[in-house]
Structure formats: structure tokens, C-alpha cells
Length: 117
Ligand SMILES: Nc1nc2c(c(=O)[nH]1)N=C([C@H](O)[C@@H](O)CO)CN2
Image (cartoon, rainbow, N blue to C red; front, side, top):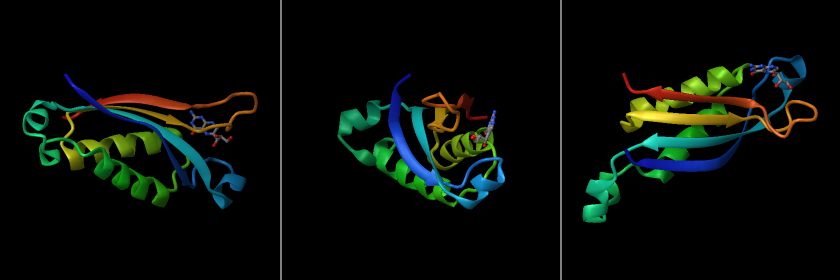
């Protein structure tokens, strides 16, 4: 299977458990890998026949900017569901990084793989 990916998509949002986190916006950084058969687009050189990574990124940015979840797990699950439901992707792997949320660590977060059902 082919993969269309978006790496290091940085978005500011409200996320976190603690009171101080409910008053600020923090950066999350997403790596997305989306299964998609690219052969029809490659044969015709037509963006309409593929997964438009610009359209995906605009939609994900809008959703994440408006979100306000406590857990990185919830945000990751909701973004994966959105991509599958709205873009016809058969499987998505998503890594959600919350940089510097843990003292001494460069990154914390979750990685999930979700198939379309
Ligand atoms: N598994 C998780 N553990 C923690 C989360 C989380 O979203 N998932 N969040 C926090 C706090 O919000 C933390 O990021 C603040 O620094 C702690 N543990």
C-alpha cells in the first residue's frame, strides 16, 4: 500500500490536565501517515484522484486549533477519526508529540494506528 504523509505539522491548541494548562495554548506536533493508492493520480497527473495533503492539513489545523481536550490520547483519536471519515483514508498512523511537556524530555505523546471500519 502507498502512503501519503505529513511530518511535523505544528499547531497551537488548548491541551492538558492541569489548571494552568486550561489557561494557555500549547504546541502539539503531528506526524501523519495515511494509506492511499496513488496509482490513479500518478497515471493522470490529477490531484482530484489522490489525497490532497494540503486539504488534509487545513482541516486538521482547524480542528486542533478549536479543540480543548485534556488528554493527548483524546486529541489523537479524534484527529484519526476525522481523517478516515472525511477523506476516505483506509488506515492512518498518527504520532502526536507534545514537546517539552515533561521536564527533561524532548517529546511526549502517543502514536496510534487506526483502520477504517
Ligand atoms: N498518558 C498521558 N499522560 C499525561 C497526559 C496525557 O495527555 N496523557 N497529560 C499530562 C499533562 O497534561 C502534562 O502534559 C502537563 O505537563 C500528564 N500526563
